[in-house]
Length: 286
Image 1 (cartoon, rainbow, N blue to C red):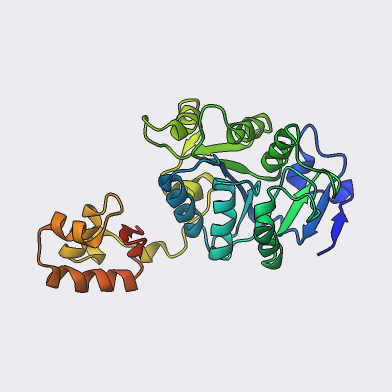
Image 2 (tube, rainbow, N blue to C red; image 1 turned 180 degrees about the vertical axis):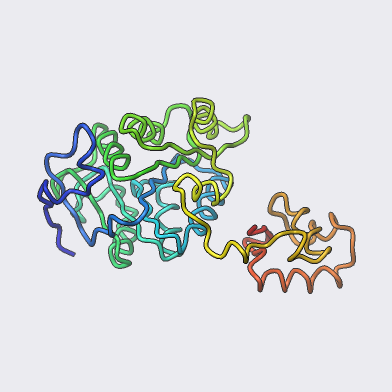
């Protein structure tokens, strides 16, 4: 795929509004429509299973709501966000801390992911010349672009010193929304995100929180499940018991009813999209 230079008059509108737009800008692939909702999703390279699960679940829940996911192609949450967007059919934009040539693209291990992003109708963007290698100074500059391209930045897992927090600071400087996923007070990866929430970031605990922040009406609100009308008593028990993902055997023991009764209910709930089984664990989708 050819790398093209974008003229300054053709920069995305949001990017043109920041105090320091790039002097040069390069693209590989196709820029998604600016009428879509541009959301930056960033986080630590040293993610936990919690961070991965949250990232994948939130992005999957945005399918059908006209979002574009923007991130930095880095190891960890960035790559998880891009991959989750691809699975959900959501356009995604990667802003690496290097030029866009295959010879220098950083990190090298995500060359295949970068090609999948372009093939799916998204793009790679950089203010660095195509053969410019990544360096310590390039990543803060890249973070500025991520924040500048988007209406809001969502931080999923970040220690107190993190590139993701640099992106959130740029977002605040640009008068954009900052969102953060809360986490355990005992987890180093949650210190940055919990700190953002203490300082006024929008706490994100479900997809609806993101939709509310973007002032997007839910599609099919009348089809949303509600405990009083749409679930059987056993299904309610299962959903309540699934306060966290767990193996099927553990769930059956927790509910305290025969497996011959619970297994058929689990099968139907999975068919109806209420729960999913992944990695030998069951988790709820509502």
